[in-house]
Length: 421
Image 1 (cartoon, rainbow, N blue to C red):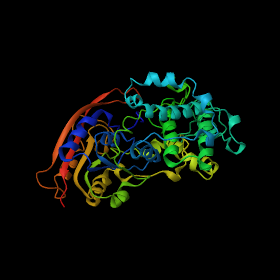
Image 2: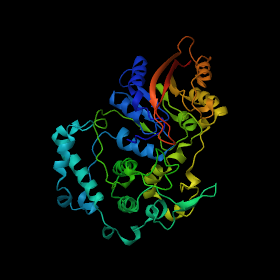
Image 3: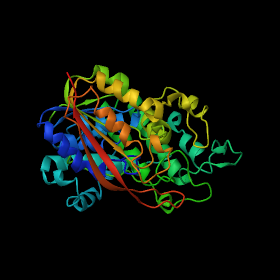
Image 4: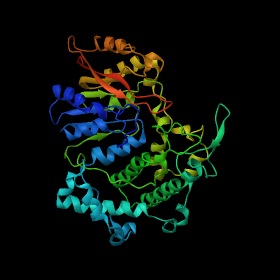
C-alpha cells in the first residue's frame, strides 16, 4: 500500500485493533469511513471482521476492490490479452523464490496460489517491458510524459507567485513508461478483456509502484523545482503485491466508490463500530493525491484529452474532480463529526486524532494539547452513553520530510464511546 501518506495509521494499528476488539467479535461489521490507503481496513479484514470501507479518493476505491473486497488471486486470459505467457514467464520462478520469506508472501507456499500468482507476475513482467509497437495507434498517447516530466510539451507552469518552470514529477523515461503501461491497460479495459477486479488490481499496482519513483516529498501537491530526488531516478517497475491479507478470509466486505462520508454513511448497513480517521487540518486529499486518483481514472476516461487540456496550478490537476471536505475546516469539523455519527447506524465510535499540526493550532505544532479538549468535550456529550467515553494517548513520531523539519514526538489519541440508540 501507499506508505508516504498523510496520517497513515500503520504505526498505531495494534492499539486500534485492541480497542476494536474490546467491543467487537470476529464477524462483526466495522466501518472504516475515511479508509485512505486501507491500512486499517486491511488490518480489520486480517483479524476476521467484515469491513465497510469508503473514501472520497478514487485510488482508495481501486485498492478496496483489489485487496479488501477481493479474496482471491485473479486469473488472466493470456490468449485474449495477446500476451506470450511462455516468453514473459522466464525468470519469474526465481523472482517468486526470493519473495517466499518476505512479509505478506507466505501464501506462495500453497501450490495453487503459487501457480495463480505466477501468472499475475508474468503479466506484470510483460507490462514492465512493453514497447510502443505493441499498442494500436489510437492508444499511443503520451499525456503523462507531456504533462509531468520536464521534457513534456504541456509541462510548463507559472505559479501564483510568478515563478515558472517545467513539471518534474517523473523523469522522462518513467513518464514514458507510465504512458505505455496505462495505454495497454486502457486498451484491455475498453475491449472488455479485464473485469473490475483485474482492472483495479493492475492500476492499483501501478499507483503503488509510482510512489517509489515519484519526485515528491510525500504528496503530489508539489515537487522539487531544481532537482530530481535520488529515488525518482530509479526506473519504474511494477511491484509484486503481498497478498497474505487478501487471502486471509472469505468474508464479504463493502467498498464505497468516491463517496462523501457524510452522504455515504446514510446508506451504510447497521454495524458494530465505526472507525473515524478524519482529516486533521486544511489539506484537501483529492488535491494532495490527485496523481494517484488520475492513475486509477485514466483508463476509464472517455476523453483523456479533455482532462489534460484543463489542468491548473503548478501541480497540473484538473479541478473538476477536486473535493473540498468540511472536515478540513476548523469551524465545520465538530458539526461535521456530529452529523456523521448521528447518521451512522452504529453501536460504538472509535476516532483517532493527534496533537501535531491540526485544525486548532493553525498548522503550527505546539507542546500543549490544542484541539484535543474540544474533541474530548464532544465525546462527553449526550450523543453518547454516559460514562462510556475513554481517551487513550499513544506516543509516536510524526516524520516531516520538508524544509528541514525533523521527526516530532506527538500523541495520537484514540477516542472511544458507545453511541446512544
